[in-house]
Length: 223
Image (cartoon, rainbow, N blue to C red; front, side):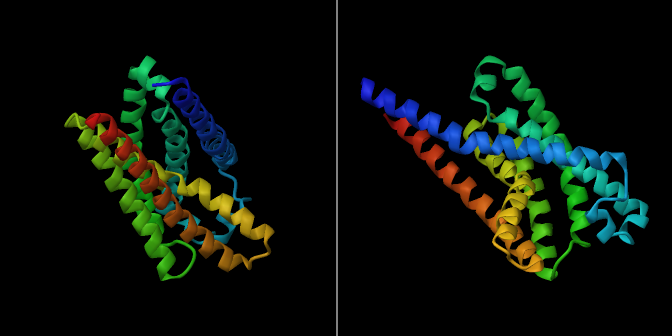
């Protein structure tokens, strides 16, 4: 590989770091920071006030706090999973944080998300989308786990990218909501658009990354 190719490769990696991973890390940590105050168990938050009747039900209230804890934990943990440094130099961290991520998604995050989807804000279409998100998150994560048990590393990466895309809808939804709010989009319409753009957009980005990585893997394997 000549020096020009090496330089281009370094520039590409730097660009991905600056324009993709740094914003992802920033907004992920911002969401975690904004979620922590909920564990004061105060009723002052607008989300809780809008659903005051639902929060009188112990199962809904418990599901909410379990779900936001699971989401916060998974978003933070998932950042470790895509660190090439940890994978190469500290593989044990990757393995154990991945196991915890899988357990939290399958046992806490996805089930509570599915339950809460029946009471989600919006029309039947939005509730259906929330149900899809919960089921897809569960399925993608389960496939990521079973494929690594089968030593299929490429398939494991593919399914975990999809799983992370579903986890990140909590982050991207808020980014799109703020953008549309600044554009003076009506609040109900803003909520619906932000939700659909977040889910579909995350899936498209995930499939684009999967396509590029699979193509790179096949090119490497055949050369």
